[in-house]
Length: 233
Image (cartoon, rainbow, N blue to C red; front, side, top):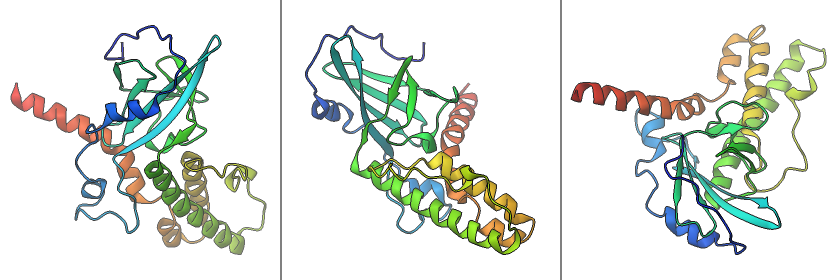
């Protein structure tokens, strides 16, 4: 099983998000992401210092609504979950996208994302302010790249783009609601198209390297831990 505790039956109607929040205090990683994103230890200007992404959600069991608090540790690539008035803190190493069935990473998590976590379909409903700032920071950067790429491509290619390459949900204005995975796909695809005409510019306007580095942190961490274990054996 991927879960460190057995689930206990839940028979609670009250919402206790604030008490769950206390369960997580002190569980954040101490290292700043800036230290691991860039060799010099400097994060990109304006990048929010964010170790964990925090969301809350709920599901219905019969007539009862169960509230859940979800924290994703960016460097570890793992989730912690607290469920209303259940004293257990669940460590969940992996969750899946409900549409793709693939393991989710840092860039798949946003308000409105649907996850299969602990075998339950769960929509991330709200997020912390830090998580919203993180989401907005990367969404703004990716949107600016996408818009610039579209403008550059107009100079060389007059045919219409696939609609998905410029699609964004105008209704999704809530905090933390930007679909970063979609934006990454749009920027990657458009920069590949521009490469035909302006390879150097296309390279500059690609998906920011630090986003790839951040997504790769859990793998690097696992490999370092395995290497350390082998040395110790």
